[in-house]
Structure formats: C-alpha cells, structure tokens
Image 1 (spheres, one colour):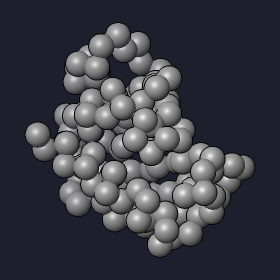
Image 2: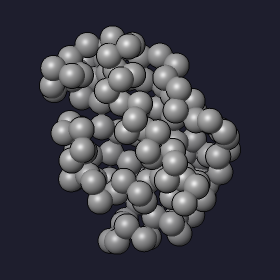
Image 3: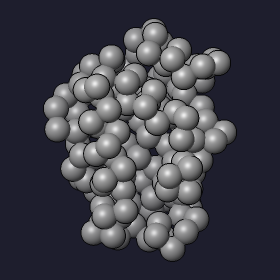
Image 4: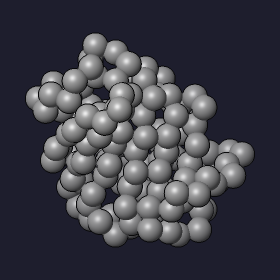
Length: 128
C-alpha cells in the first residue's frame, strides 16, 4: 500500500493509504479475515455497524456493504488500530493510537516505515 498522508487527532494518528488496485467485497473480506486472529478485543463493522462474528470464517460470508472495518488491539504492532476498507475502491483508512514511541507523532516517513510492511501483508492476503 502507498501512504497518502497522515494527521493527528486527539491521541490518534489518522492515515489514508492507496491499495495497488481497486478491490471488491470478496477481497476486503479476505483481508479482514487474515488479520482477525491477530487482534484482541476485536470488532468487525459493516458500514459502521458491528457485525456479530463468532468465528473468523464468518467474515467471508458477511453481506456486502460499502465499507468493512476491523478494530481492536493488534498483537503484532501492540497498539489499538482501526482499518477501514471501502468496497470497489483502492482507499484504506488506518487509525493508530499514539500509545508508543513508534506512533508518538504523525511523521510521514517514520509512520510509513512502521506500518507499510504490515499493510502490504494485509493487501497480499486479499489475493490468496
């Protein structure tokens, strides 16, 4: 993914990213499914409404909507994060809590180095 920009807002770094290609619902469901088990206190939202998920496989059969969000505490980057994918677009919004030195400020270069590989892995999971 390509980082478009960042800004700070009340203890969070808000960022926008571009996927390599526009993706549809099946792809974004695969992306969320691939990271679901690596979050604690996770929630999945379809168009800002919490979806009742009892097993991660259920993500793959969610009714199609305009956007799909996963939020919770990432066990990989060790902070609260919220990732929102938009159906039929190449736009992804990522919000990360400013809880560690790594995410203390919305420095474009440092933030890109911190999250780019993580988000690239999620993008690749869309095509498995």
